[in-house]
Structure formats: C-alpha cells, structure tokens
Image (cartoon, rainbow, N blue to C red; front, side):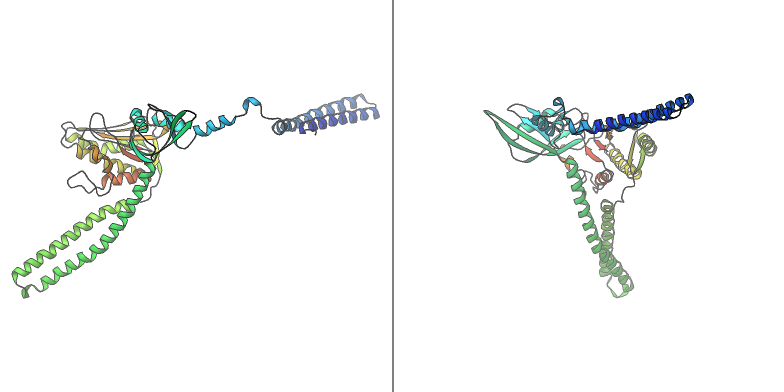
Length: 405
C-alpha cells in the first residue's frame, strides 16, 4: 500500500515536470529571448510556491504515516510490571508494607504522609501501624496542623515462604469535620426553631398575666399578689434570657453564604493590629502580626475571615488574662503545596489534652460562663471558605490554632 507521504512526493514531482514542459513549449512556439526570460522566472516562482505549499502536507503526511504505520520504539514501551508500579505509585490511599519491626511506604501518598511538614512524629505513626493486627479501625496521629484521624485496613500476603502485611491508610479528618459540622448545623437549626416556638407563647402569657394582676390588684390579698407577681416576673425573665441564649446559636445554622474576593493578608493584619493591639498593650502585653510576604493573598470572604480571626484573638486575650507578659502571635506563611497557613498562638495555659477534641463542639465551653459558640462559629466560617482549623499543641506551652486554606 502506498503511504500518504509517497503520494505527496509523486504529486510534487509530476506538477513540477508539467510546469517545466509548459514553459518549454511556450518558448519553442514563440522565438523570443525576452519571453524565455519571463517564462523561466514565472516557472521558478510557481515552482518555489508549489514546493513550499506541498512541504506542509508532506511533513504532516510523514508524521501521520509514522504514527499509523511505525510501531512504538521498544525502548519506550512499558512492561506490565512497570504499568502496575505506576498504578501503585498514584493510588488514592497511602500504602505501607509492614514487616516485623518496620514499616515501609510504598507509594507517593505514603511518603508524603511521613515526610517533614505533615506528620509531627513519623516514628509514632509507624508504631501505630506496626501494632495494627488486621482489623479495620480508626487511628489518630499528630500532624503539623493538629490531630488527624485516619481509617486503616490491613491484609496479609503470602509470597512464597515470606509473609508480609499490606496496610492502606486513608486520612479523613477534613471529610469527618465537614460532616460533623453539617450535622451540628441541622441539629442547632431544629433545636432553636422548636425552642423558640415554645418560648414565644410562654413569654407572652407571663406578660399578659402580669398585666391582669395589676388590673385586679385590689381584689387579691397582698401576700398572694406579691407571690404571683414574683412568679410571673421570674417566668418572663427566664423566657427572655433563654430566647437570647437560643438566638445566639442561630448564627451557627444561618450564617450567610461567603462572598469570595481577593484578600491581601498584610492589609488584613494591619486592620486587626489596629483593632486589637491597644487592649494587649494596655495590660502590659503585646500582639504581633507577621506575614511571610507582603504579596500573600487569599480568595475568601474578607468579612468572615476577619470575624474568625477576631474570635480567636478574643479567646487568646481571655486565656492570657493572668499572664504577667501576655503575648499574641498571628503569622501567615505558605505551607507545603502552596497552601496559605494562618497561625494564632498565645502564651496562656493552653487546652488540656483530654479536652482538645471537644473545643469546637457547639454548646461546649471551657469557660465558667461560656456558651460554646466562639470556636464552633470559627470552624463554620473557615470551613465555608474552603479551609480547615485545628488545635495544635505548643512545645513551650500556650494555645496554637492553625487555619489552612
């Protein structure tokens, strides 16, 4: 079968010969030196134009012929074993080979998991993996962003006389956090709606009863009148207080949708410094804001991001109330993968280890008169803008919360 490139060559050659023959016939018919020169120039011009036009098709046909007709060079062909290695390398879970006394990462996700900048203590993570006996279960491990949860599953392999264990680890902290937040939002929405429906008539009836009592003051004994007045006043006051308490939780289930914009971190820090630093200086402390680069930016709702940081700074201010030299540090850096990392740290007492898992739970507070709204709202605002917030332990004491976008 004649290839496409060969057909192009034949077409160019036949066209050129036809052009030369036509020019020679014209010169032979009319014996004129001037005409010979004109025909020769015209033939050369047409031949050059035709050759150039044909060249593009010739090269395209040659490449097409190589693609269709020529087999892939043997040195570029992948063996089945190489293909399987590529699939293993890019598997969507972290895979480890477990021996008697060590664990070996088998693909890119596993190596990233134990690389600097992710797991705080790869040795501790390896120890958890080695203790795994095959059941499907959850584990927790420390990372640079705080404690994370992961699902692990193990299978045993018999390779001849050698026995190995293959373990798959899938970090799911972000997904679990998002699902937990949605569940709390639905619960808070239902609770606040039902409670308010019950409180409204109670408050209204107590006020109406109090007014009726005033209108019939003379017909009641004084002791009874005072007792009823106190009762109605107590009901009304508690109903108003509970209504205010419930209304404060509505922000957890009815936060507005974020309106993303480009937020310049250095400008955001300037506003926060002007807003919060004077209060820290007034009690002998200091608040430091530092951005790794003046060009750091984030696409998020500027108002919601600012509110989340204000809540964290307010918590730090309250936590360091008894420190002789209270200090707040707010830093912005680029983390691994080009993600923006905002860190809010103080030198207060920090959060006890046994309470860390509960601090973002609505209705839960470590303060005597706290309502458990601040950190729950922070997580919701950060999550709705595509980020995560975690509590991370500080080596030198104090609290450290890390926001990653």
